[in-house]
Length: 64
Image (cartoon, rainbow, N blue to C red; front, side, top):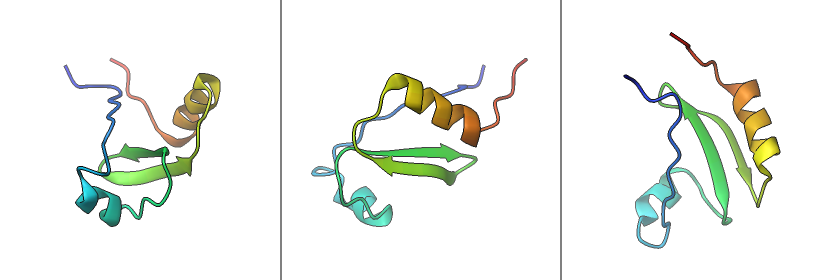
């Protein structure tokens, strides 16, 4: 079964290549990807309700 949503935490001090690749300048930075493409990016602390809204508005979710 495929993952519907995967959340990863990346330590940019230990993964400087990723920080450079995605132009991360502030911590925390949240990025939402789908099909290998960035769908949304934001910085700062957000509430779970806000994050749920971002996911619902920026990604299609396939249900079986």
